[in-house]
Image 1 (cartoon, rainbow, N blue to C red):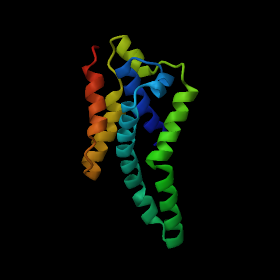
Image 2 (cartoon, one colour):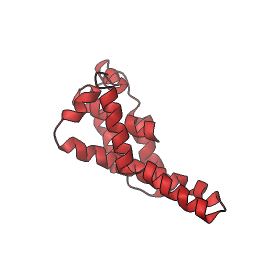
Image 3 (cartoon, rainbow, N blue to C red):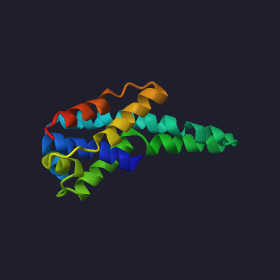
Image 4 (cartoon, helix red, strand yellow):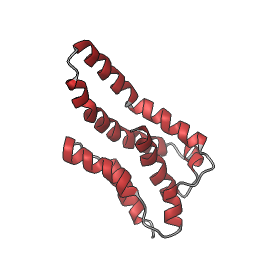
Amino acid sequence: WKKLAANCVINPLTAIHGVKNGQLLRLDDNIDGTITNILEELSSIAILGMEPFIQAEEDLEVQARLQRSIREHFSVKFLKDFVTTVMTDTSDNISSMLQDVNANRTTEVRFLNGYVANLGEEKYSIDCKNNKGMCNKVEDLKY
């Protein structure tokens, strides 16, 4: 889920804004809200997706620890910290999605943000308008 979170944030936003990974950290304040919105949807889906594993545990104390750990590790804050670290560590990289857009190739946005949006809506009835929005914005770029 952490890698998916990084890819769902970094790839489409670098493609939309035409910047390297690290430059996302220096864009306007609206980018932070966009990142949070993408991650809120992904976080909800990740936590809900882990529920069957928690419920399969018979020991209630272990269930409680699992639930706390999952909620912490899939929280928006935890995921956002991870994504920010990836942006920093790969600051000079040009994302594959930006490279695809620049080369007029189809991107993998439907396999990243589209996957999150479809899973959220079909399995958990979560409106993933932000991840859908990333798909639409990237696909509106010229290929």
